[in-house]
Image (cartoon, rainbow, N blue to C red; front, side, top):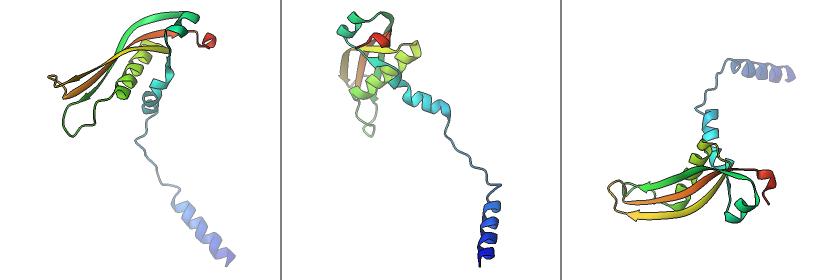
Amino acid sequence: MKYLTVLLASIVLTSCSSFEFKTNLDPQNFKEYFKPSYVTEVDEDDLATVPNKSLGIVSGLSCKIKDTDAQANEADARTEARKKAVDLGANAIKFGKCVRLENTPACQVSVTCYADAFIIDESKLK
């Protein structure tokens, strides 16, 4: 009985040895997905206590085009702004205003958030 079990296990294992596993997962997708976490949100008080360099203004847009689309929201707009800040090389972001508009030519509802992108010395951040 032991030999039969070993023989069957061997057959099963060797029959799967030529099996090729393919996936649509791409390491670049992981980098893009986690990109917003590469920036730290700061405020005026933080910027006053650490060396920093402004890289410019970034904005993020959340847009509801059709009735079946998800509602435009501030969280998605902020995430988009964070991605753009990382693309500029920033490691910090200071949000200003978010503006909600309805019935624009492009969107039924849109939310746009504006922020300053910075490079800061994170080791000196409280």
